[in-house]
Image 1 (cartoon, rainbow, N blue to C red):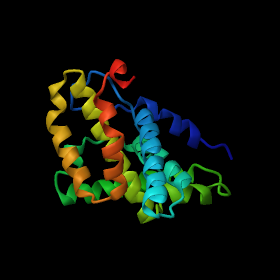
Image 2: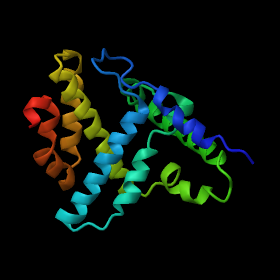
Image 3: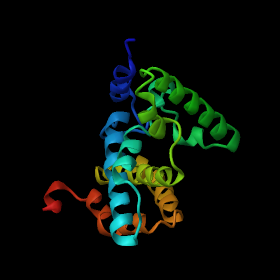
Length: 191
């Protein structure tokens, strides 16, 4: 059996994010997924080292790499539409689940068990870390756009920060306190 799974995964780079917003720097799903994986891994490490957690940071990072894989088949539905009401949100979750199932079926059967935990049956604890990392990534994007003078991201920054603060996750608070400010700095200011 020839599989097109990884050819599909490589197409994440063609799906643009923030489609309804004017961007000073375009961001695609592949770039975003990498950043979410880095941030999710960091949150898992912080949870384990600072707050006595016992989560597999590697599995968290891998789940984050694949967290938007369904968008290869569905495209990226803008957040204001996706979360407009519970009916749309639930229907879109169903569409994402079908897309992830289709991706999973593209793999040879003997490889599928290794991808099920990151595509279709994500542990709730891992899912929460990935979701927080996804929001951190969105907030970092907002800060970078605002830093470039793009006021288009002002409201998104406010809403995303509010969402992050509502998570009540000590690892998120730790990350925000120790690392987040750097995203608003220029290269010269980072030195």
